[in-house]
Length: 189
Image (cartoon, rainbow, N blue to C red; front, side):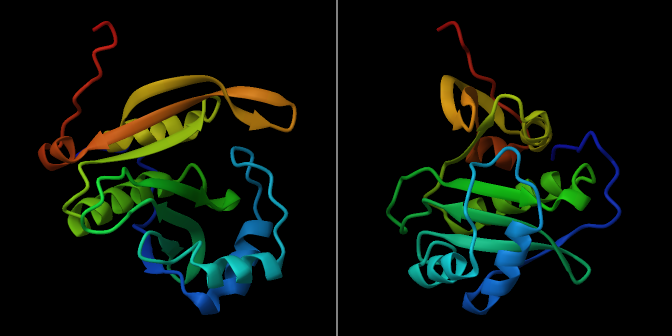
């Protein structure tokens, strides 16, 4: 399919589902890394436990995975808006890679995994979408490496602590994923 531009992947990560007993591991992962391109959050162990219990990380509509390198948890993927078998809703996701494991191809491997997971397990889904801040060059490159196409540019749509930034949206079509190609957007229609 699509080849990563960064060939610095030391090993292919594995993926396992997060479950209710992972509250401490989720809390430690979220609080021990810097998330410059994610909204500010006040993480507490109690908050994480409540989110796990309420279905924020796991339900019919949400699936969350650890990204693991050997036995170390190096990232997390939260897929949401999966809906039921009749839903035409477009899935979205939150992808986080631990600070020490960035720029090693983990994001590309994780995005490939989540794309395959959705299209292989949800036959009613014909596209997946992700958004990021315009200045998140690493994530934008990850989208391109996996075959996601820039579909939108939202002006001043991402609230930060100092104001607003532009936000960009990328998507992949099931048909493009199946063929291993990209159907580009015709902007001047």
